[in-house]
Length: 323
Image: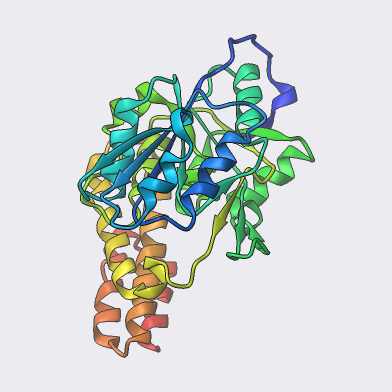
């Protein structure tokens, strides 16, 4: 099955310009929220609206946002988590397409333009994603996202220098297992978001991957921009890095319920989910080993023998037993 094709191979169908509602969830982001908002205001293709949902901040986040006046729709809610904040932003959105941004990250100037142009050429896309940069707080480059995953490298090779490509078929499974697109490169129809039920409320980590996997399960064609669209800023005091063991436990908790909800999905999607859970189990086991909890690390890996029976799972479990 062909799993990707360059956009110049597809038939171009005219479409009216899409309207993007950009939703920024923020909690105590007084140091970075202004930069995130400004990066959206500086887009070469203007957003339909910018919606900032303040998830009960106790610092000066509100003052930082309000300095932008009517350019930003500001919503304040009691602290309920990032998933609930993004869902509230979607409830207030009026654009036909949604785009998201975290308060400590930022868009590059042509991020919306590239996806708008792709959508005008390929109006039947189920959703869009793309490449991005991992950067330090000072802006220095750490690595590129697509180059870091097997699916991303395959798509770049198939694109052969083209600005974007369509992802489908078996590559959707690889994308689920190790995705290269993230919240700040995702664009999806508002109606699709509503039908999926939005981000899972109560999930503290990996809520974005949970939604992305469910989105892939109902998608046939995904538009991928092969150029960096945004910057993902790596903070050493972030939740995942400050408490990696808790983060890995919560990641697994966010993924496991998808086995039941996607039981009737295609084999490609279920295989991708299995691979994603495998990586989550390994990451949790590594974190437990580092904490000196070898027995718990082995116990975290044993379900793999039932979930993915085979030599690879045996090797994974053996590697943890050996420490």
